Every structure is written in structure tokens, then in C-alpha cells.
Length: 69
Image 1 (cartoon, rainbow, N blue to C red):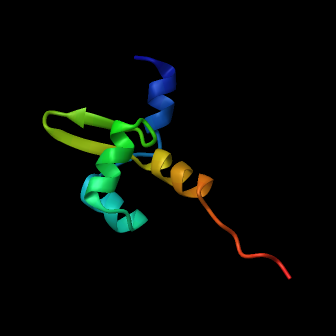
Image 2: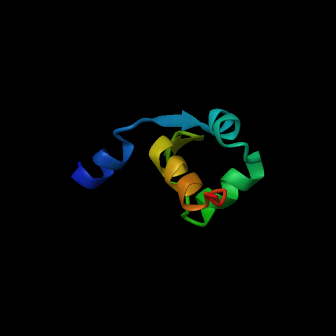
């Protein structure tokens, strides 16, 4: 098995419904992000599981912080 792939999944995977709840994104939005390659996932049978760290990375990349005053 590819060590890089193992490392990517080492933090775990979550169901699309759990990814929705965690991120606040819509189901369609998550599937679009997966299709565009912006969120990594694994597919086992017909079920897609989102790589947790990939979702966290996406959220962090789009984080807008309040100006420190």
C-alpha cells in the first residue's frame, strides 16, 4: 500500500452526513468538492467516506479571521 495514501487516511474518515454536520456544508456541496478534487474521499462499495483531515484542511484554507484591533 502507498504510504502517502495511508498517511492521508490516518486521521480517519467520516460519512458524508457526518461531514455535513461537522462543516455546515450541504450534501450537494460536499459531493461537488469531492468531484472537483478539493476534498479527499474513499469509496467502499457504493458508500463514500470523507477523509476527515482533508475536510479540516479545506475549512482552514477558507478561514476568514476577524481583524485584530
